[in-house]
Length: 167
Image (cartoon, rainbow, N blue to C red; front, top):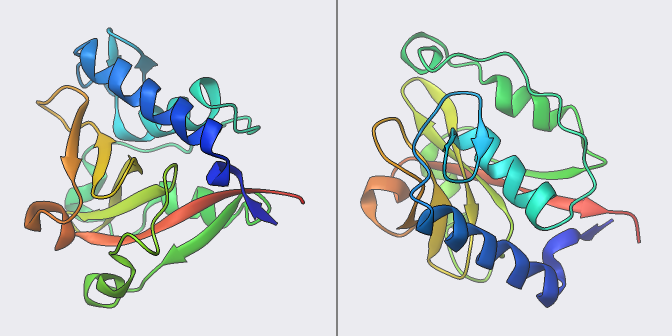
């Protein structure tokens, strides 16, 4: 298997698309991914990787609620990704402390699906752009670009999933 986003043209597509979603001031809306109208972190990540940058993956979203972060350590997103090793190479750690070794520009690449501890479990996602930037959306905020090495996010980083295709 090889990383789908190793190709610089695909990296350029996902970076340009991320900026387009941010520039459109796409608000947070649960279970949506419509540029300029609304997206949540899961649907935004999927839209960027597939619709915008061509990763061949039909998305059947797992059932989740925004309130799950308050009471559950089990993440439907992680379960979904872990069940698809032919599409996503897992680099998820058991705890935030162990994930810190992955938090560098040599390990992370453009297009990686980042996973963050939010509440009791790894419930938040974003897409890596050029180090140290990533795009995501949170309740109360529109789509925006943040820095992964900002302690707000680095102390919640649990790992990443890399989109892969057959060689």
